[in-house]
Length: 164
Image (cartoon, rainbow, N blue to C red; front, side, top):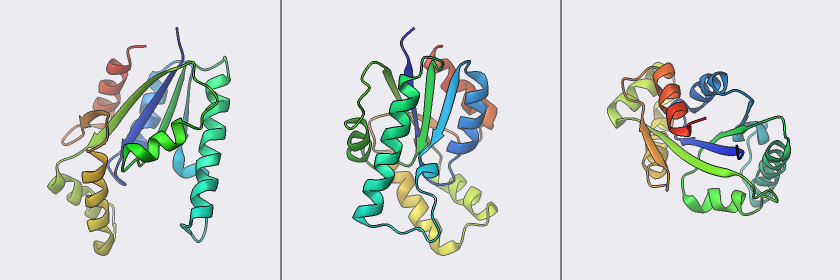
């Protein structure tokens, strides 16, 4: 079986992290990388230099996992607000021998706003999260609506579409 790179995209708070944690449990011989792990800094500074560094970190780790014979599935979760951002990372990979599957987790806006409020997201940041939700939905990917679905259900939907 050819190795699969599974992208799980979505706005902050839509459920990428917890869904990937469950999906990784369902997929035998899988590894999961969260793009945020490549750029956790205090303070979080967004400049051209830090963006290049984060993309280089992601590319390096993805290449290493994709080249490791022990794993069949490489899960990568991050916020891709445009196809251009994803292409920029994908085009830098040295590894090309894999099947790519891209998913975007979505949610109805009112339910998403409720989730963010329950999670304690500051009101002034909710508008930015909603804009990210809209932008992520424009990407070329399979959309999975998480509204009123359990994490287990969303992970199972992804698992079934990946067809291990």
